[in-house]
Length: 430
Image 1: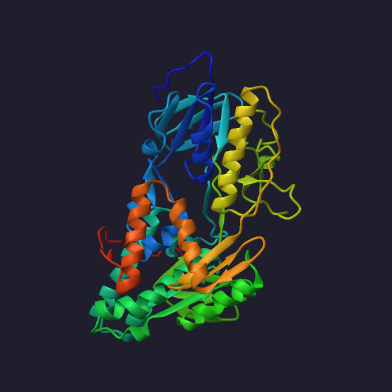
Image 2: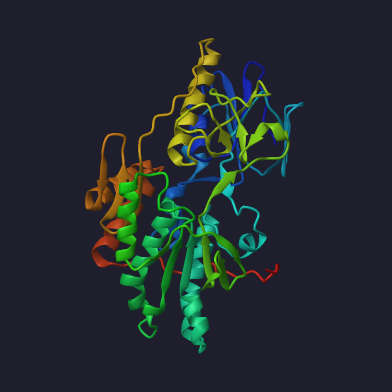
């Protein structure tokens, strides 16, 4: 990988430049450690706004920022664009598509991937939304389907092309459903005047008895009512059994005909080969309160891929969201810096800063530790928090400009099919 060895510095290899990995890479002391960040992309993605890329609200460069630009002019820091295939924990060596690399300390910050719960049909035909390429595919799919609906004479096929099924009623599913409903109400009737948009249906399927399981009952009810007002068809206590590319099969012999199923029903840790079965729990790497993988003295895991079950409030591990990942990245960097100064390291303490979700224009819900917000004020808070969380002034300026324009003229300006999406052929049978 063409990285020099420095005798006086311990080499820290970080795999993954998400919220957790990026915080560690930025804050480790360069006079004590040689820091090497490895990722399959050369940019950091602000994942909470992926749904806006998918629904033509923002271009991808508004929510992505070059890693080299984030951490620049920094001594003893190296970034390598690579895919890690295997970790040899005994030899302290990682193997990638561009070569191998030895480490003194290894930090796993690989994040999460879509969890299809073993259903190969759903994995093959449904659309995930965990990365910018996936969001762009979804955007192309949405626009292409309306173009195809204009051309077909088959009414049943037209309706199937205009029916969207979102599986998963968490923040991603709720925000995506709201964005599609607003496209139906404000955008698509103007873009497709010769197409009866009333035949467009948006279904939101949730396995539990309410939306937004991680938020309060009050916020969940508010989100439910807001989505109903926007015309979203909500299914609660609804388990998806299968999907063949045309029909969603639901328990109790119910079906929805749709060419567009968006899977937002869960994620699992992105684990690289090399760990033992006992190192993994609930599809995440088991770590202690210091983020150390329990059987190794020099391997750590943070963010979505890390599983900590010592906090009684979070017996199934911390939420796989941005806030815990950011806090864990900062905490681990501090402990490494303490260690370099021969100071006592500290166990992680998570501070729940709250959670939020937007349902659409002037509609959002926010749960904070001591109070809750809904409606316009919550929407403003949601916008502010997401705006300041974006990396780089340019990204903030572009996102804010887009939001202001869309607010006043009810328009999404990036409805472009730049990279046409091709559907997969049917590979599995029901």
